[in-house]
Amino acid sequence: MRFKNFYAPSTKQAPKDATLPSHIFLLRGGFIEQIGAGLYNFLPLGKRVLDKIYSVVKEEMDKSGSLQTDLSFVTPAYLWKESKRYENFGKELLRFKDRKENDFVLGPTHEEAMLSIVKNKITSYKQLPLNLYQIGLKFRDEARPRFGLLRCREFVMKDAYSFHANTDDLDREFELMDKTYRSIFTRLGLDFRVVDADSGAIGGSGSKEFMVLAENGEDDIITCTACDYAANVEVASRAKKTCDKERPEADYSAKFYTPDVKTIKGVADFFKVDEFYTIKAVVKKAIYEDKEKLVLFLLRGCDELQEKKAINACNALELSDASEEELINAGLTPGFIGFINLKKDVEFYIDKELENETQMIMGANEKDYHLVGISVVNLNKDRFKDLVTVKEGDCCKNCGSKLKQSKGIEVGHIFKLGQKYSSAMNATFLDENGKANPFYMGCYGIGVSRLVAVAVEAMHDEKGCIWDKKLAPFVCDIIISNLKDEKAVSYANELYEKLKKEGFDALLDDRDERFGVKINDFELMGFPYAVVLGKGLEKGEVELIERKNLNKNIVKSTELFEILREKLV
Image (cartoon, rainbow, N blue to C red; front, side, top):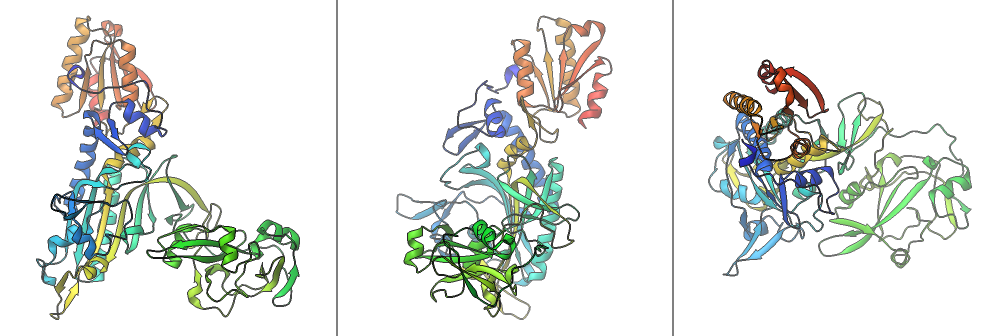
């Protein structure tokens, strides 16, 4: 492509609300433009990157045996009502009516729509398994769209849905998609981790996320320093925590006067013990479809409550903080809450690591009093849940080595949906015994447009983007310093044509612009290599710049093409 015929409107400044490098550089480099809150147009540079990602995803999905489809962006609401998600999904689901007052949604995900394709058409186990995918637009009406393509409202997603006659075959496909996703992200040149994850609003089980490591990642990832254990912090677990400090001793449920001692630190200091031996009470307001109620969570004083785990424990839609007044109205004593002498109508859960613990210290449910010598026994097994936030330095549950915490950005997610949607929508097939059974389903998503931003977050510097050659819109930028230099122009055109003939995406910067503008655009747009044709060409020399580290090398003009051909493969 000749730059004078190309459209890439670069700017020196980005909008004030652009804070992340990917948001700033993609806007400044002319890859995208914003047309509304969370709405972006892909300009030619951005579209070239998007198409490269699309091609890799498509090739690997086709190789796996999945079949490509293209579903309507608009979905009739009755399908969502059948699955019971029309009201439950939340305000992110954009609902609207057409001129005939029929209800529709803009699809944020397509479980219902894809299931409707096979319902009453796939009728026998002999027609299974089947995996259908699409790469297309999705819309989620984010309350606070931000960070450019990382948290926008309209986006391009690859979503696949598989249908099976039994769980064994679903497990097989799940592992195949795991392998396929690893191939996709490896081909895209990304440093990623596969982590255990929560299924979220889509539901199901067997959930894995594919995370690209990046400093500005919005997710915390826990990984083992010795084995391959990795998990999103929302679901991460650890080996049971231990403490070699002296344990407090007292008769069962001995009550101590602890005036104004309302914090875990205060309790530990008062009794001169480690916080490990105290029980922390955290009260949250659990929000359900039709009600709200207070729920009590109890864990070690040295631990922190993991909110997603707490939501799953009590099956709430979300949790919010409870005020002191709400606690008092519920018969709770702020600062002195425990599970003994608790009002019967207060729902509570205890972290599983506390089960069968002895000689613990906990609030007495009475102002200014704590109980010492508590044994966490004789409680319903359903009370015990994994509630803690796993932290760096905790030990791996698999091998006992230390865990570390990193930042990552989710780029892919695979689920075992089971029969959740097929049962709700009465989508069945006849099994080997002639009995009608709901399909066993899997769901597999990749944020295709999000990957454009993720690649920049994973690799950039203060000057701009640094594209891997597998994703770069152009792999080589040929910069002519002086358009009046006929020898340089002739050499540039010859090199450009040779690179094109070899199948390399080259950009010939033949614009009538100052050299400084051209080099700044190269650094901002982040093409892997630049060839600078200047006065050195008189001596048969050209300058080759590698964008990754901005190393500059003088090479012979007669050898340049072979050098580039080797580097660009």
